[in-house]
Image (cartoon, helix red, strand yellow):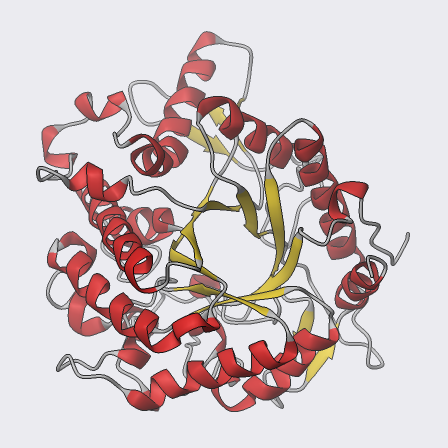
Length: 444
């Protein structure tokens, strides 16, 4: 099996952006120098994190950021996507933590000096606990607190940021965090999900206005995760269940942003589950965006269980699966991109996350992660196929740069193209990182 990655002709242009991505809570550590986040509190609850771990140290990136940026530079990527920790910027009393701001300014300055474009995510799930204590994303005021935080950050960063994302995967924040409770803050009520997402989307719209005012030259948008759904059989019942799943898990998040309306299904769900939509909210939410970030990992097959919610089936036993138990299905990425192109008038698309967890082992100084190389190759080919069919895609980011804290799964799953020994914090480029670097060098 080849250790190489081959870039299709669609990726040879200098205008196509290749990058790597991380998020603050998953890599930073240094909890003592910031406020508590909902993930700190969640990690303290017995049974919530698979290995009982937390983000107190993670990859110690706060102390090792210069080494990590040197690694990024060595990969010859065009861009680095990372997130800002809200609890590292705004204290519980509302004052600015200048030390936290300076940390990110140092990273941005180093990236600029190295000629690497900074893609900054303003919210990647680590809500300050002091805001959760007031209701978190179930409280409309949180959207306005986000607006104030964004204004502080964007004014401070000036022209150092090439691209902003307001939110990363609001589906995970709303559905996993407030409806089913397997992510922080661990609330689990059916009626919470749609209420939380409305306030997240409102926060996005308010932040877009701030970005237009204070960072007019930056490219600004949002990052959504999508799952393409396929019926488990040819039955009309399964087809209907598949359409329902698509509306609940995909359409609900993108339609308000691009069309200024929720799916028609909003009229069919119980009134207690519906968000409270104030006059003007959807106008704020549907601010024009410069790009849509798309995160893709796998597909789902759907079986009807009417009148209950559709059932999402596990990966077929015969399929290739990742360490997460997710089916490797690159065709799903092409199908998803073509469906988005059919359904909406889209801005340019950036694949902001794509990658897999594999059972990686460091042997004689080498991590031979062939499955990851195959995965990246097949999924980059899937992106190229969508581009060949007319979808405007301008970038592709590998998730993730580093092995890191994988949320409710702790440190059990490794998504990185760089291996992290959590005892010594030593970083080792996996063979996938070397293949990615060599592929990018071939463009030059």
